[in-house]
Length: 331
Ligand SMILES: [Mn+2]
Image (cartoon, rainbow, N blue to C red; front, side, top):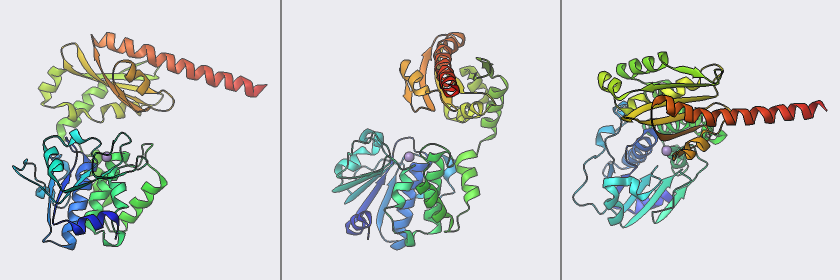
Protein backbone atom coordinates (compact mmCIF):
# COMPACT_ATOMS: atom_id res chain seq x y z
CA UNK A 1 0.00 0.00 0.00
CA UNK A 2 1.36 3.42 -0.92
CA UNK A 3 1.35 6.30 1.57
CA UNK A 4 -1.59 7.97 -0.18
CA UNK A 5 -3.58 4.71 -0.17
CA UNK A 6 -2.84 4.33 3.52
CA UNK A 7 -4.16 7.83 4.29
CA UNK A 8 -7.25 7.17 2.18
CA UNK A 9 -7.96 3.80 3.81
CA UNK A 10 -7.88 5.37 7.28
CA UNK A 11 -10.23 8.26 6.42
CA UNK A 12 -13.99 7.97 6.91
CA UNK A 13 -14.72 10.95 4.68
CA UNK A 14 -12.58 12.44 1.92
CA UNK A 15 -12.70 15.75 0.06
CA UNK A 16 -10.73 16.16 -3.17
CA UNK A 17 -9.86 19.73 -4.18
CA UNK A 18 -8.04 21.43 -7.05
CA UNK A 19 -7.26 24.93 -8.26
CA UNK A 20 -9.58 27.70 -9.39
CA UNK A 21 -10.36 27.79 -13.12
CA UNK A 22 -9.61 24.05 -13.38
CA UNK A 23 -7.83 22.68 -16.46
CA UNK A 24 -7.32 19.17 -17.82
CA UNK A 25 -4.64 18.27 -15.28
CA UNK A 26 -6.72 19.52 -12.38
CA UNK A 27 -10.00 17.87 -13.40
CA UNK A 28 -8.10 14.79 -14.61
CA UNK A 29 -6.20 14.25 -11.37
CA UNK A 30 -9.25 14.91 -9.16
CA UNK A 31 -11.48 12.51 -11.10
CA UNK A 32 -8.69 9.92 -11.38
CA UNK A 33 -8.45 9.78 -7.59
CA UNK A 34 -12.24 9.89 -7.14
CA UNK A 35 -12.83 7.02 -9.58
CA UNK A 36 -9.92 5.03 -8.13
CA UNK A 37 -11.41 5.22 -4.64
CA UNK A 38 -15.02 4.60 -5.72
CA UNK A 39 -14.15 1.60 -7.88
CA UNK A 40 -12.63 -0.19 -4.92
CA UNK A 41 -15.46 0.71 -2.58
CA UNK A 42 -18.56 2.40 -4.06
CA UNK A 43 -19.80 3.17 -0.55
CA UNK A 44 -16.82 5.40 0.28
CA UNK A 45 -17.67 8.96 1.31
CA UNK A 46 -15.63 10.96 -1.18
CA UNK A 47 -16.51 14.24 -2.92
CA UNK A 48 -14.67 16.28 -5.55
CA UNK A 49 -15.16 20.01 -5.04
CA UNK A 50 -14.18 22.10 -8.05
CA UNK A 51 -15.40 25.12 -9.95
CA UNK A 52 -17.22 24.11 -13.10
CA UNK A 53 -14.56 22.64 -15.41
CA UNK A 54 -14.45 23.00 -19.19
CA UNK A 55 -17.32 21.12 -20.84
CA UNK A 56 -14.90 19.47 -23.29
CA UNK A 57 -13.73 17.30 -20.39
CA UNK A 58 -17.21 15.91 -19.81
CA UNK A 59 -16.15 12.61 -21.40
CA UNK A 60 -14.24 11.81 -18.22
CA UNK A 61 -15.97 9.29 -15.98
CA UNK A 62 -18.02 10.96 -13.23
CA UNK A 63 -17.49 14.49 -14.55
CA UNK A 64 -21.09 15.15 -13.45
CA UNK A 65 -20.32 14.01 -9.91
CA UNK A 66 -18.09 17.07 -9.38
CA UNK A 67 -19.63 19.34 -6.78
CA UNK A 68 -19.28 23.01 -7.75
CA UNK A 69 -21.39 24.30 -4.90
CA UNK A 70 -19.51 25.46 -1.82
CA UNK A 71 -20.84 23.30 1.04
CA UNK A 72 -22.23 25.11 4.05
CA UNK A 73 -20.27 22.80 6.26
CA UNK A 74 -17.66 20.20 5.44
CA UNK A 75 -15.07 18.82 7.79
CA UNK A 76 -13.69 15.72 6.07
CA UNK A 77 -11.26 13.37 7.75
CA UNK A 78 -8.92 13.82 4.81
CA UNK A 79 -8.58 16.60 2.29
CA UNK A 80 -6.52 15.84 -0.84
CA UNK A 81 -5.40 18.89 -2.85
CA UNK A 82 -4.34 18.16 -6.42
CA UNK A 83 -2.49 20.36 -8.95
CA UNK A 84 -2.97 23.38 -6.70
CA UNK A 85 0.23 25.42 -6.28
CA UNK A 86 -0.97 27.71 -3.46
CA UNK A 87 -3.59 27.57 -0.73
CA UNK A 88 -5.49 30.62 -1.99
CA UNK A 89 -5.78 28.99 -5.44
CA UNK A 90 -8.40 26.73 -3.81
CA UNK A 91 -10.52 29.90 -3.82
CA UNK A 92 -14.04 29.32 -2.38
CA UNK A 93 -13.18 25.77 -1.30
CA UNK A 94 -10.27 26.82 0.94
CA UNK A 95 -12.38 26.47 4.15
CA UNK A 96 -12.71 22.72 3.46
CA UNK A 97 -8.94 22.35 3.76
CA UNK A 98 -8.95 24.47 6.92
CA UNK A 99 -11.58 22.33 8.59
CA UNK A 100 -10.22 18.95 7.45
CA UNK A 101 -8.73 16.67 10.14
CA UNK A 102 -5.75 15.84 7.94
CA UNK A 103 -4.55 16.96 4.55
CA UNK A 104 -2.21 15.95 1.76
CA UNK A 105 -1.15 17.94 -1.28
CA UNK A 106 -0.05 16.25 -4.52
CA UNK A 107 1.45 18.67 -7.01
CA UNK A 108 4.14 19.44 -9.58
CA UNK A 109 4.52 23.23 -9.28
CA UNK A 110 8.00 24.29 -8.17
CA UNK A 111 6.51 27.32 -6.37
CA UNK A 112 4.26 25.20 -4.12
CA UNK A 113 5.21 26.11 -0.51
CA UNK A 114 3.73 22.90 0.93
CA UNK A 115 0.59 24.22 2.60
CA UNK A 116 -0.95 20.85 3.56
CA UNK A 117 -0.08 18.63 6.54
CA UNK A 118 1.75 16.31 4.15
CA UNK A 119 3.09 17.39 0.77
CA UNK A 120 4.13 15.30 -2.19
CA UNK A 121 5.53 17.78 -4.70
CA UNK A 122 7.60 16.72 -7.71
CA UNK A 123 8.65 19.79 -9.71
CA UNK A 124 10.22 17.62 -12.40
CA UNK A 125 6.93 15.87 -13.19
CA UNK A 126 4.98 17.01 -16.25
CA UNK A 127 1.69 17.14 -14.38
CA UNK A 128 -0.13 16.42 -11.16
CA UNK A 129 -1.47 13.32 -12.92
CA UNK A 130 2.09 12.05 -13.41
CA UNK A 131 2.79 12.49 -9.68
CA UNK A 132 -0.53 10.88 -8.74
CA UNK A 133 0.19 7.87 -10.96
CA UNK A 134 3.22 7.07 -8.79
CA UNK A 135 1.05 7.16 -5.65
CA UNK A 136 -1.51 4.64 -6.89
CA UNK A 137 -1.26 0.90 -7.31
CA UNK A 138 -0.64 0.48 -11.06
CA UNK A 139 -2.44 -2.87 -11.02
CA UNK A 140 -5.63 -1.30 -9.70
CA UNK A 141 -5.75 1.51 -12.27
CA UNK A 142 -8.81 0.92 -14.45
CA UNK A 143 -9.43 2.15 -17.99
CA UNK A 144 -11.56 5.04 -16.65
CA UNK A 145 -8.86 6.12 -14.20
CA UNK A 146 -6.24 5.80 -16.94
CA UNK A 147 -8.30 8.12 -19.18
CA UNK A 148 -8.36 10.77 -16.45
CA UNK A 149 -4.60 10.51 -15.85
CA UNK A 150 -3.78 10.54 -19.56
CA UNK A 151 -5.91 13.68 -20.01
CA UNK A 152 -3.92 15.51 -17.35
CA UNK A 153 -0.56 14.48 -18.80
CA UNK A 154 -1.59 15.42 -22.35
CA UNK A 155 -2.88 18.81 -21.18
CA UNK A 156 0.16 19.88 -19.16
CA UNK A 157 2.80 18.48 -21.51
CA UNK A 158 1.19 20.05 -24.60
CA UNK A 159 0.73 16.53 -26.01
CA UNK A 160 4.24 15.41 -24.96
CA UNK A 161 5.92 18.47 -26.44
CA UNK A 162 6.85 20.93 -23.68
CA UNK A 163 10.20 20.80 -21.89
CA UNK A 164 8.53 19.17 -18.84
CA UNK A 165 8.03 15.95 -20.83
CA UNK A 166 10.47 13.28 -19.70
CA UNK A 167 11.18 9.64 -20.44
CA UNK A 168 9.18 8.90 -17.28
CA UNK A 169 6.21 10.84 -18.71
CA UNK A 170 6.29 8.68 -21.84
CA UNK A 171 6.71 5.53 -19.79
CA UNK A 172 3.60 6.32 -17.74
CA UNK A 173 1.67 7.27 -20.88
CA UNK A 174 2.61 3.88 -22.30
CA UNK A 175 1.38 2.09 -19.16
CA UNK A 176 -1.90 4.01 -19.40
CA UNK A 177 -2.27 3.04 -23.07
CA UNK A 178 -2.02 -0.58 -22.00
CA UNK A 179 -5.25 -0.06 -20.06
CA UNK A 180 -7.07 0.25 -23.39
CA UNK A 181 -7.77 3.97 -23.42
CA UNK A 182 -8.81 5.81 -26.59
CA UNK A 183 -5.69 7.95 -26.63
CA UNK A 184 -6.33 9.62 -29.99
CA UNK A 185 -9.78 10.72 -28.94
CA UNK A 186 -8.50 12.00 -25.58
CA UNK A 187 -5.82 14.10 -27.30
CA UNK A 188 -8.37 15.57 -29.72
CA UNK A 189 -11.02 16.29 -27.09
CA UNK A 190 -8.81 17.61 -24.34
CA UNK A 191 -6.23 19.48 -26.43
CA UNK A 192 -7.03 20.17 -30.08
CA UNK A 193 -10.81 20.45 -29.83
CA UNK A 194 -12.20 23.87 -30.84
CA UNK A 195 -15.68 25.30 -31.13
CA UNK A 196 -16.81 26.79 -34.44
CA UNK A 197 -16.45 30.33 -33.09
CA UNK A 198 -12.96 29.63 -31.72
CA UNK A 199 -11.98 28.37 -35.16
CA UNK A 200 -13.40 31.44 -36.88
CA UNK A 201 -11.65 33.95 -34.63
CA UNK A 202 -8.38 32.03 -34.94
CA UNK A 203 -8.71 32.08 -38.72
CA UNK A 204 -9.21 35.80 -38.68
CA UNK A 205 -6.29 36.41 -36.32
CA UNK A 206 -3.99 34.31 -38.50
CA UNK A 207 -5.13 36.05 -41.67
CA UNK A 208 -4.47 39.47 -40.17
CA UNK A 209 -1.11 38.56 -38.63
CA UNK A 210 1.87 40.77 -39.44
CA UNK A 211 5.40 39.50 -39.84
CA UNK A 212 8.33 41.74 -38.83
CA UNK A 213 12.08 41.65 -38.06
CA UNK A 214 12.69 39.96 -41.43
CA UNK A 215 10.14 37.27 -40.67
CA UNK A 216 11.74 36.29 -37.39
CA UNK A 217 8.81 37.72 -35.42
CA UNK A 218 5.09 37.79 -36.04
CA UNK A 219 2.14 39.31 -34.25
CA UNK A 220 -1.61 39.44 -34.35
CA UNK A 221 -4.22 41.28 -32.34
CA UNK A 222 -7.87 40.73 -31.46
CA UNK A 223 -9.81 43.81 -30.36
CA UNK A 224 -12.55 43.92 -27.78
CA UNK A 225 -15.15 44.82 -30.39
CA UNK A 226 -14.18 41.76 -32.47
CA UNK A 227 -14.53 39.52 -29.43
CA UNK A 228 -17.98 40.97 -28.86
CA UNK A 229 -18.88 40.52 -32.53
CA UNK A 230 -17.94 36.83 -32.48
CA UNK A 231 -19.28 36.33 -28.96
CA UNK A 232 -16.01 34.93 -27.65
CA UNK A 233 -14.11 35.40 -24.39
CA UNK A 234 -10.36 35.51 -23.75
CA UNK A 235 -10.03 31.75 -23.22
CA UNK A 236 -11.48 31.20 -26.72
CA UNK A 237 -8.30 32.77 -28.09
CA UNK A 238 -6.02 30.05 -26.67
CA UNK A 239 -3.83 28.46 -29.30
CA UNK A 240 -3.51 31.45 -31.64
CA UNK A 241 -0.07 32.46 -30.39
CA UNK A 242 1.09 28.85 -30.65
CA UNK A 243 -0.11 28.61 -34.25
CA UNK A 244 1.81 31.81 -35.08
CA UNK A 245 4.96 30.43 -33.45
CA UNK A 246 4.95 27.50 -35.86
CA UNK A 247 5.31 29.74 -38.91
CA UNK A 248 8.43 28.98 -40.93
CA UNK A 249 11.34 31.26 -39.96
CA UNK A 250 9.60 32.73 -36.91
CA UNK A 251 11.57 32.84 -33.66
CA UNK A 252 9.07 34.86 -31.58
CA UNK A 253 5.29 35.12 -31.89
CA UNK A 254 3.14 37.70 -30.12
CA UNK A 255 -0.57 37.67 -29.64
CA UNK A 256 -2.37 40.70 -28.23
CA UNK A 257 -5.91 40.67 -26.92
CA UNK A 258 -7.41 43.99 -25.96
CA UNK A 259 -8.57 43.91 -22.34
CA UNK A 260 -9.59 47.60 -22.06
CA UNK A 261 -9.16 50.65 -24.28
CA UNK A 262 -5.40 51.07 -24.74
CA UNK A 263 -4.63 47.93 -22.70
CA UNK A 264 -3.51 44.59 -24.12
CA UNK A 265 -2.73 41.17 -22.72
CA UNK A 266 0.39 40.10 -24.58
CA UNK A 267 1.23 36.41 -25.00
CA UNK A 268 4.77 35.66 -26.17
CA UNK A 269 6.20 32.40 -27.53
CA UNK A 270 9.73 31.57 -28.65
CA UNK A 271 10.90 28.74 -30.85
CA UNK A 272 14.57 28.19 -30.03
CA UNK A 273 16.84 30.71 -28.39
CA UNK A 274 15.00 33.90 -27.40
CA UNK A 275 14.06 33.99 -23.70
CA UNK A 276 10.61 35.60 -23.74
CA UNK A 277 10.28 35.41 -19.94
CA UNK A 278 13.02 38.10 -19.74
CA UNK A 279 10.98 40.37 -22.01
CA UNK A 280 7.71 39.71 -20.18
CA UNK A 281 9.40 40.33 -16.83
CA UNK A 282 10.77 43.67 -18.07
CA UNK A 283 7.20 44.77 -18.77
CA UNK A 284 5.88 43.55 -15.40
CA UNK A 285 4.75 40.05 -16.44
CA UNK A 286 6.37 36.65 -16.26
CA UNK A 287 6.40 33.06 -17.41
CA UNK A 288 8.82 30.54 -18.84
CA UNK A 289 11.68 30.83 -21.35
CA UNK A 290 9.53 29.79 -24.29
CA UNK A 291 6.10 30.96 -23.10
CA UNK A 292 5.42 34.16 -21.21
CA UNK A 293 2.98 37.03 -20.97
CA UNK A 294 2.50 40.58 -19.73
CA UNK A 295 0.05 43.47 -19.84
CA UNK A 296 0.97 46.34 -22.17
CA UNK A 297 -0.44 49.85 -22.55
CA UNK A 298 -0.69 52.20 -25.53
CA UNK A 299 -1.57 51.71 -29.18
CA UNK A 300 -0.85 48.42 -30.94
CA UNK A 301 1.92 50.23 -32.78
CA UNK A 302 3.56 51.33 -29.49
CA UNK A 303 3.20 47.92 -27.91
CA UNK A 304 4.78 46.08 -30.84
CA UNK A 305 7.56 48.67 -31.11
CA UNK A 306 8.37 48.28 -27.43
CA UNK A 307 8.41 44.48 -27.58
CA UNK A 308 10.24 44.46 -30.90
CA UNK A 309 13.20 46.36 -29.46
CA UNK A 310 13.78 43.63 -26.87
CA UNK A 311 13.29 40.78 -29.31
CA UNK A 312 15.66 42.35 -31.80
CA UNK A 313 18.34 42.79 -29.12
CA UNK A 314 18.16 39.13 -28.10
CA UNK A 315 18.24 37.96 -31.71
CA UNK A 316 21.29 40.15 -32.34
CA UNK A 317 23.04 38.87 -29.20
CA UNK A 318 22.37 35.32 -30.24
CA UNK A 319 23.54 35.81 -33.81
CA UNK A 320 26.72 37.52 -32.63
CA UNK A 321 27.48 34.68 -30.22
CA UNK A 322 26.96 32.11 -32.97
CA UNK A 323 29.17 34.17 -35.29
CA UNK A 324 31.94 34.40 -32.67
CA UNK A 325 31.73 30.70 -32.00
CA UNK A 326 31.82 30.03 -35.74
CA UNK A 327 34.96 32.08 -36.32
CA UNK A 328 36.70 30.56 -33.29
CA UNK A 329 36.13 27.14 -34.76
CA UNK A 330 37.70 28.26 -38.05
CA UNK A 331 40.93 29.20 -36.27
MN1 LIG B 1 -0.87 20.81 -13.67
